[in-house]
Amino acid sequence: MTKQVLVPFSVLLLALWGCGSPAVRPDGRTPTPPSSPTTPPSSPNSFSISPTSAVAGSLDVLLTITGSNFLGRPHNFSQAVWSSNGSDTGLATTFLSSTQLTAIVPADLLISPVSAQVFLLTGDRMGDLPLQKSGPAGFSVTALPVGAATITSISPESAPAGSSDVTVTIDGSNFDQQRFHNSIVGWSTTPNDPHCCNTWLETTFVSSTQLIAVIPAVLLQSPVTAQVFVETGDPQGIGDGVSYPRSNSVTFAVGP
Image (cartoon, rainbow, N blue to C red):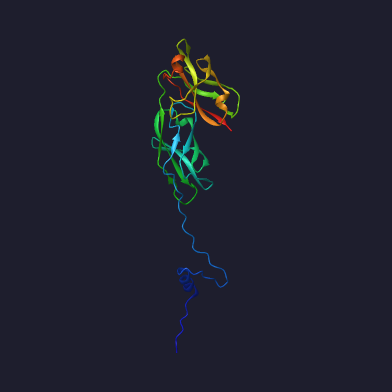
C-alpha cells in the first residue's frame, strides 16, 4: 500500500510561485507578489549654474540651474545647497522642469569674498532613504574693485513683459559725476561674460548715494532676468568698451 504524503499549502504556494505559475488562494484571489525594495532617486550627475559669480555686497542672486534628472514632487525633490567655509546652507529652490531649477542665494551669503560650491540634494528629507548628492558647481564672491560704486537697493526690482520705459531709482554709495568720471548704469543678460553685450542706460546723477536710470521698452518685451550694475569712468571710454571699476550687480526681473 502506497503511503500518502501531505504537503502544506504554503509550501506548495511558494513552489508554484517560484516556477512562475500564478498561484491561487483558496478564496479565489491571486496573492500579491512581494514588493521590491524602494530604490533611491537618480541623482543629477552634472549641471551648470548661471551666474557663476557676484561681487561682495550684492543683493540676493537668482541662480538658474541647468542639467537633468531634477525632481519636483512633494516627497522627492531636488534642492540646491550652498557650501563654503565648512558650512552648508539650503537655498530656496524652485522646480521648473526635469532639466531646470532656480535658486536664490541670499545677500547674507554674499557679504564677503569667498569661493563657494553649489550642489544638489535629491530625495525626501523626511523619508527613510539617504538623500542623493550631486557633484558641485563653483561660485565666486569677488571683492569690489578699488573706487567702485556700491548698490544697496533698486526700485522697482521687476516689470511685466511688454512694459513701456521703466524708471529705476538706484541707491548706494560712491556714485560720481565729473567731467571724465561719471557713474553710468549698465544692463546685462549675460552674467557669465561681463564684457559682452552690455546695454548702457540713460542715467541721471542725483547725488553720491543715488542715481536714476531708464530701462527702455525694447529691453522689456520678453521675460528675462537681467543684472543691473554701475560703472564709473569716462563716458566715452565706457561706450567704447573700456573696463572701469564696476559695482556689485542686482537682479531685475522681466516677468511674463
